Image (cartoon, rainbow, N blue to C red; front, side, top):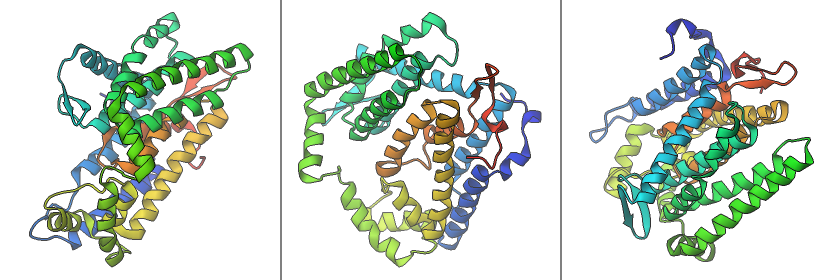
Length: 353
């Protein structure tokens, strides 16, 4: 556990934490205003815990440089373990042709595989953790993980991974022409594996085709249309978590996720909350781009692709992996190429990108 003396309370004042906590305050106040007989829990403890986790991980880098890099690799290794269990047929179930393991959500599993694959591939390619030849062992589970991701039938996971591969190959920085050729070759091999598995998955093919031909989004479009009157009647400050729970109970017969973070924020906190939240996202995306342009760090930029997927068609406010990615992008270590030393990203000017 990180020692508390390494924590800097002043960090809370930087734009990342200010915007995150400000949004939480808006969400809480609007929820208090809209307390009702169905929902009276006005503090969203999940969002609070995730923002606190964001701050803890950011500060932990102060004590142990590269700890977030190691943490991301550990997350990927955990996904390898899940993929091996899938391959062994342990804990898996099929529902409508889509695989799940230990009852977890199919889309979450798919995105977890997509994120983990990006982490493994970049650890092999850039070797920031100095793993030596051992890093090439990480190639072995990649086909199983790709198959697992495909079998979940998650369209957003597949699209995210395809964009990760394309973006990674195009933006991979190297002065060695041979290394660039290897990068393109690896991209071609992974693309071939993807095509083979996709062609073998009737469920995913069917889901892709109905989305392409009929514009079907697994019922999300129906949910979005039914949320529009709520947004239109409370455009400025929304109805809070309590008001949304009431609306969802009356409209859907129980809690129904908007499956779109922008709409979710609009429902909870209106235009005011959305502006604050978009500012927070803007800072995150800008920092990821800055780290790539200045330090050549590709993984922070690539991880923003599945984050976009979660923003558009899933959830992220209450999903810890999203906030862990945010912490990695903001607080992850950068490499001073002139000195050959790793330094914590938060030592950069807080007013910088």
